[in-house]
Image (cartoon, rainbow, N blue to C red; front, top):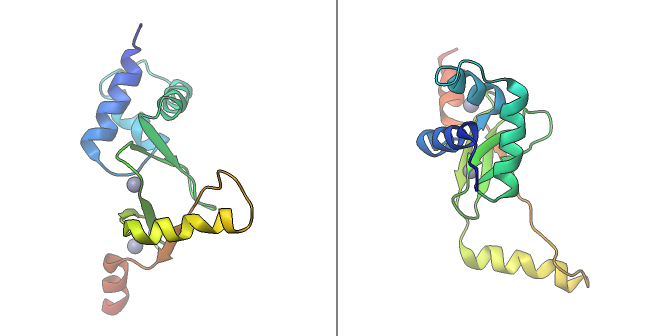
Length: 130
Ligand SMILES: [Zn+2]
Ligand SMILES: [Zn+2]
């Protein structure tokens, strides 16, 4: 299998940063390593990484899509002020319980999408200073 160096570098960035990055942020970081890279090829390679399960795309209405390297099932909490995203780990029993809902309504292979929203600690502190 021929591996695209762009794909490899993107995955390295995602794994190293271990946070949720926009395609633009990845592009800027990648440009330092591969000056000829285009934003379009960053998008294309991100899609490939998501298809192969190496990365995951996080889409929240009103925000640019973020990407992260695959690190197992988890949920996200979003700051409605600064837009930061953090990982949220939910107890397995809660997830299991929620997953029953689809079956309860007669749906097969129903999936679960939960997003949490709030104002993060940093933004809260800024507000207090005003
Ligand atoms: Zn914030
Ligand atoms: Zn995450």
